[in-house]
Image (cartoon, rainbow, N blue to C red; front, side):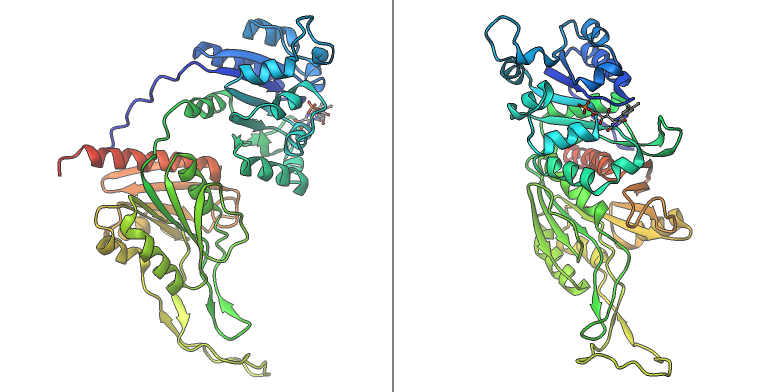
Amino acid sequence: MSNPRPAPAPTPLNVLVGVSGGIAAYKAAELVRLLKKAGHHVRCAATRASTSFVTPLTLEVLSGHRVYQEEYLVGDGSGDELHMTAARWADVICVAPATAHTLARLALALADDFLSTTALAFDGPLVLAPAMHTVMWQQEGVAAHVEALRRRGAIVVGPATGALASGDVGVGRMAEPREILDAIHRLSQPAPLAGQRVLIAAGPTREAIDPVRFLSNRSTGKMGFALARAAAARGAATTLVAGPVALETPPGVERVDVTTAEEMRRAVEVAAPEADLIVMAAAVGDYRPIEIRSSKIKKGDAALDSIALERTEDILAGLRAIAPTALIVGFAAETDDVIDNARSKLESKGADFIVANDVSRSDVGFASEENEVTILGRGSEAHFERQSKLHLADRMLAHFERALANRERQPA
Ligand SMILES: Cc1cc2nc3c(=O)[nH]c(=O)nc-3n(C[C@H](O)[C@H](O)[C@H](O)COP(=O)(O)O)c2cc1C
């Protein structure tokens, strides 16, 4: 069994909690309470709309300070620009809940209230806990704002899936205050993967049949890209070998684009000998046409009898020989007997961990924003409940980090 290191005690931080106008604003009070209990200094900034949901008096009593509201336009008599004072004071700004409107303001660098003006004057870490109805969360405009903020380094916690204020069930609930607190605490901890090299392969591969047709699979690369984003955020020098996907490169990640299984094998084998951790999250095609037709196969009335296929090389099985000391993680995308198949893969491929992934379900796995996995190790099994791929990626990396740390502690 792995022996987790205790989390280091967090350094007290100056946290400016921004509260915007959604039903989840009542949970901001709990977040302020938890932050204070953990020893942080807290001030709150309430948008005008938020004051209909949670009173500034509640936030004032819990934080021990007057709540910043719209008086910043007239000042407090000190002659200071209050938004600049708050921006200089804060080590971190955490907006919880972050409404669609406030996310838009932040993404577009609008500065039409105290919170957005302060955020614009602030160049430290921004932690956002969006909360809204599923339909709002899935709007293209909201997704684009969130993606733009993530690209600029904002840490987005949640939203979670569950019962919404409207009575519907879906993604959009604000992350629990405890989860937001954990994200803030990670900011004050040393980057756990600093000095480590992480190699991640993601997405599908594609094998040509003729100049217009190909064999591929339903992988979108989201899980692998989430892992690469999390590895870079945790301080690792991260290389991402990506099959054909429509995803942006996460910040700080070196990306190598490939198409076929053979190209993926070559790219992985270039980076693998240097890597401390290799995660094969790609859905590498097992077969390719023996012959690629040089011109398009003509459509006829008769059935096309067969396309002869040959096996591609098994990238995962070949890794141990070229990366003898790396921690090697494979994925088993299965539709039946998920755990049994994953366990036999662990044995046969010489991997340290296999992430078992049930791709028969439509709510998790391929193309979904969420995933639920079991990580099988040699003598260990850890289940990770259904959650966003980004959050899951972070938790999976913490799991692999413990294995890396245990390995370093073992005598050679
Ligand atoms: C009852 C009620 C509940 C609302 N809940 C949310 C919510 O959960 N998320 C959200 O993005 N907007 C929600 N809104 C809309 C926001 O309050 C509205 O967009 C407001 O302008 C946000 O302003 P702010 O971002 O400055 O706080 C809600 C509105 C009402 C009236």
